[in-house]
Image (cartoon, rainbow, N blue to C red):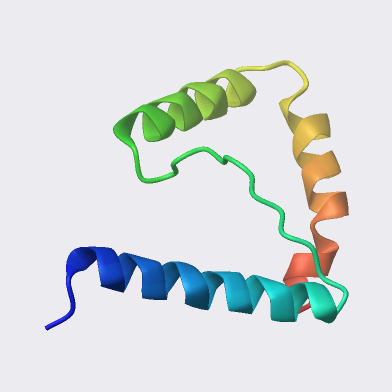
Length: 76
């Protein structure tokens, strides 16, 4: 059985080769951090924002705007 160091080196070589192939196809690597939608804090903040929106005097206009820009997803 290969040692952990050899497996790590093999994995690193595979990743490097994959990235080289992607670059050869004109792609570039982009890594970003995004909110963890699975976290309880995310759910709590989303609920807070939705309550604030529902209580806003601009709720109808805000929802109309969201609806107007959401047609793309509705037509898929």
